[in-house]
Length: 366
Image (cartoon, rainbow, N blue to C red; front, top):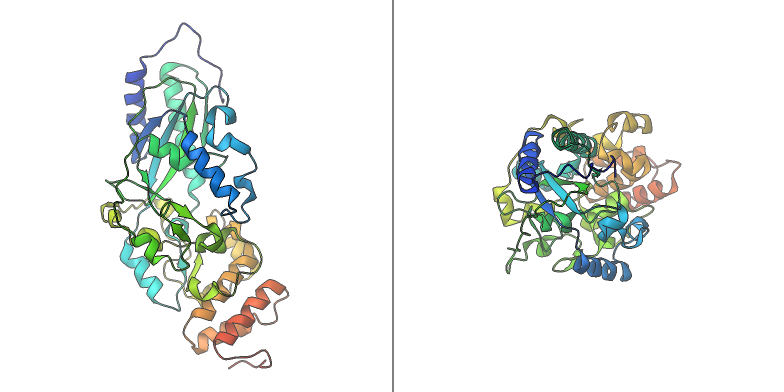
């Protein structure tokens, strides 16, 4: 916990405090806020089974902390409740569909078009906790934004923020799924909110549209086939059978959210930090493929894209260029990286050129 415990003689009205926390969360810029207890036994069993089947791929960190992910009081001793918040990042879905339909443009997951959300949310959560402390005195808390083993979607569901959909994303019946999650673990015995109930019904749009069929069953994602995992988390070469299915998606994938009927209720946002940078919402594959490593590092400063590194960035773009229409610009872009020192990128460039009918024996530009 970040602060000392409260003196025993100070006992807040916890019901009033819970209402005040929700009001302060709204003032801090969060569109949703709820409070849950820390019981996650069923979710722990689901997580263990998912890990046992190897569906997490190479994300070893998912299993490194044992059961602390599903046991908040073991991760942060003294935790009694979790305050979960949601921050909207929705954009016009027509923009996304237009990019996906244009094979020469690059598709970047909507959450990654602007600045990294982690710092923004963490700062707001810290200020929220500080404001609570200013009103009731010191209390034990820790702020998390995807920064520790936290089962955030299950906690948010239990706090009433939404249900976990068949695509494994959280869905709010009043606001869709385009929102980030953050948490404050607290040692306050606050009254809890009723958990959200599921409303996917018989709908399978997210399962049906997945380009790589990574949603292997309702509520079960095989990360090893997921384009978000492949383009962001996975190191090394991507399976050749999966490359044509990736299309022009170079960092993440939103298809399962784009088709979700509940996202007709999603709110668009003009949060300055989430506005597209470097024209990533309209950029061509060839333009992005031309970025040198120095340019990549400069342009992705403060962006979630930087975590992929330049080599994986080029690998993903090479695959997308291989899937693009055969145009002089596309072929010239691939030729420009044909002699790159990185063997992994070079292999993907050669694969892409073969997709355009250019074999390894060809060395001249078109």
